[in-house]
Image (cartoon, rainbow, N blue to C red; front, side, top):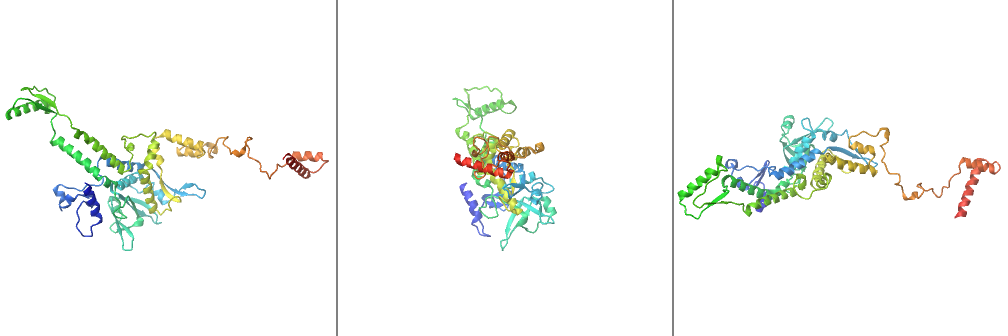
Length: 462
């Protein structure tokens, strides 16, 4: 099997144009094995193309987990502000498209199928349709796409596989890259040709498929009996045939579960499962773990064994830090390239992963409570994240802090220190009293005398 995988890579990279090469052969619908490729009429000889997505239950679970999770996250167009914050852009072309990509699909339907094709085939394509202002107003997901490079390096795409778009628009000519959303994974063979991680699981799928196929053939065509009959007597062929027929008559078909009567010293011996058969489950388990490893998928997300997480938030954060975070960022950057955004941190598209904690009510409320107590959120901001109205009267607009949280410079009197160069100014009452004491001086002169006296007292004290 290792040689098969090596030939697959070499045949796609080393063969010249027009030269024959051994398989397997990469077709638009999947892979054709080297054995099948020797026949022009391979479909008539019992061979078929192996599609990308048909890789077993584990591959389907991983691809579906990514597709369904990405479809759950709503996207927003964000722009950075001069004060360091950010604002949600509501009237842009991107903000309209991420709400409704076209008139026959929701954004959830669009992202679900886009992510499935991205992980099943290694790349996904969508046609962008512009309005009279030159803005992209619609996105139409395409099942097939091929990148074409012109002599001057310009990139075009040949798109097909959308029954609605093919009836509305003329796709006979190549479409320029500025009107195509192209999301692709690793590109080992061509800069514009992505490869699915399913290809890395070929050996594991082959192993699991061979083991399961052998078991199916065993149970259908080679099923061994549950019991063996033993005797020390010497039996003729006719006697053995009669005994076998009598046993089957009492234990098969409608008479299954009957009580056979043994004679001639016959003994029924149960047939047990050998250790080799018991290794099948372990082989399949290892194959599933390797598939999950290739997709960077935590087994706990799929409900399989392993170390459990203390909360749903920790489980989601673990996945976001590995495979899911990359998938979301990769799709966001592809949208940003199509809509000519400036990129992080100035202008970007962001899918909100907080939607993944929609059912984790306790974890969500505890996080908001800590944010309010730590003065990160104001009460109104925390309430807005839960779709609650603001506190009446504007009392929840400012972040809150406990009263005893003050700088150390406040000292024991809990007041800010007075500047040393700014002595306290006498009040009007003190100035009037000093004027009367000094024989009727006016208020301004009396205030100056009091200030000078206070300054002299401080110097003497020092």
